[in-house]
Image 1: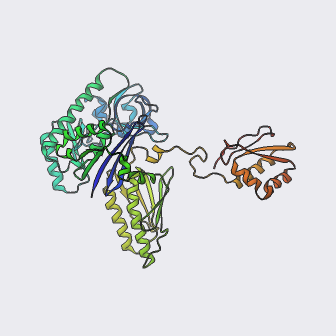
Image 2 (image 1 turned 135 degrees about the vertical axis):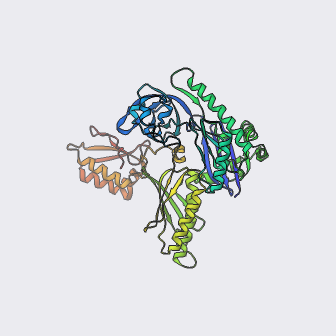
Image 3 (image 1 turned 120 degrees about the vertical axis):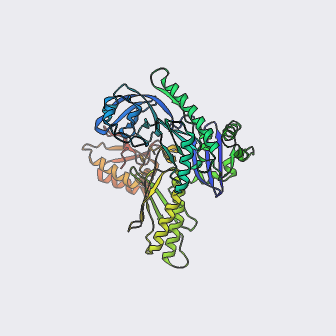
Amino acid sequence: MNKKILFNATPTEKRAALLENEKVAELVVERPDHFRLVGNIYRGKVTSVLPGIQAAFVDIGINKGAFLHAADVDPSLLLAKDDDLMERFSRQDTSKRGRVARIPIEKVLEEGQEILVQVVKEPIGTKGAKLTTQISLAGRFLVLVPDTDFIGVSKKTHDMSRRSRLKKIISQIKPKGVGFIVRTIGLKVSETEFINEIHMLLDSWRHIQDEALSGCGIKLVHKELGITTRVIRDLFSEDVTEVHVDQEEDYKDVLSYVESLSPALAKRVFHYKEKIPLFDKFNVEKDLDRLLKRKIWLKSGGYILIDRTEALVAVDINTGRNIGKTSLEETIFKTNMDAAAEICRQLRLRDIGGLIVIDFIDMQSMENRRKIENFMRKTLEADPTATACTGLSKFCLMEITRKRVRPELQEFFTDVCHSCGGLGWIFSPETVTARIDRDLRRVHKKPHNITVLVHQAVADYLHKDGDIIKAMLEKEHRCTIDVIVNEEYDQDEFSFKEIPGGIVREEQQ
């Protein structure tokens, strides 16, 4: 697969795009007023402990209190070894990450306590950032896990002999008291590269410890890498043939970082200097224009619809213009296969997380169903973000879960519509007219002349066919009605001038 990474920077925005076979697979965006928090390490202060939900809120110096669940609190990182409470749980296996003693959070934390925490999930919507006390430092090939001797290998490889070999190599070169996890990108690197990165990560961890122990109060102890070096660290592999950077300062940062880790790959980094904007040159902007669209057309002539709700993302598949050539079953299967590939791409591109439900077009052939299931599982395995999917139900529904650590790009790029409140619909002129009628019925002593202020579309409806609708209202309510257009009103807003207490109607369903 041909892969490229593009970096585009302007004073208002920095963007990084991963191209796979000339199509955008992932997009990362950073703005001056909206920096990424995931990976940052803070010395925070516990503001409240809630035993009822086994969680605490921690002030880390951002606008909203951050959330720390009991499952993300490692008591061994907070309590002394000779602590009586720790002794009662000493028989439990705490050697592996995530398998820590489940002590009630009120026994571990108290209000006002200062603790070292790391952000594992960005603030999303009304929810604050999610924290953990189980600190980890990501490098290019390895992840450092302090205060444990655990050695892990990326789940992306199922080769047990390779896993065993990598664990043996790491165990021989790592110091005691720290653990490491081999990342997917590190499955093919040499022992020398592992040694170099171990030294770099240990130096970073020592610096973090010194920062955490100096002074007191809330403090940012470690800031995650910026967008350029972070994307290179996470996405730049042997499969990437070219890296293009359009700003000289970013180009120098990328080149310096690559040369320090993999000098042989430095020749793949290019400073883009052409007059045509970088994203236009590689046809990226065309793909991004469709990023937030609800309907996405497929090559087969079918299309998919992506609808986001509070609980899940629903994806519907339709044959559209695809009328097929042989049989209905073959037409449906072809549409479903095209949709499956596009859906997997859109999940990564839009960074959709949580629960996704896909409504495939119903297929009678069990073989075709199995092909769809196998294709989805294989394609989702290539997604760097953790995903899992079910098989097709008898109604041809498939459920997918995808880890969510940051707001989706739709949330990043857009605000909720002030007119419809996120519904995606507003009242029609006919409905607004009916509401005007009902409000007039509620007025017991109507003045002889009433002025109603409305949107232009509602005024057009009232005046259509020679004012027939307006005349009907006047006859019904025994008054004359003057219709005035208020250019500041949305389509479903209206108000009365002469009726005491008349208000602008803004309710939406």
